[in-house]
Image (cartoon, rainbow, N blue to C red; front, top):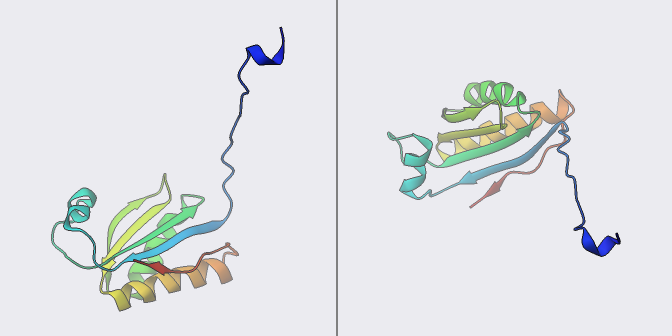
Length: 116
């Protein structure tokens, strides 16, 4: 048999590092997003953080809620996703506090806060 008879196989592996890969604020979310998140009593902006390892999301949630007038909309310790809601200034403060703590204290690689 020659190589042309078999398709090329590619094996991908996920190797988590100590990193925050997304820190984003959605300033004016579509109302459908709240329903999808299960957050029904707000029209506040949404902050999103993704982390690896995923368990670090618990720490991020704790820091975020202690550093600004925000609420946790969704925290998934298995995927590393954290969604928070609050006023933009409070979201910025909470996200920046999380980034600073993870970078300086836990030696994570972090990203910058983006906004849409």
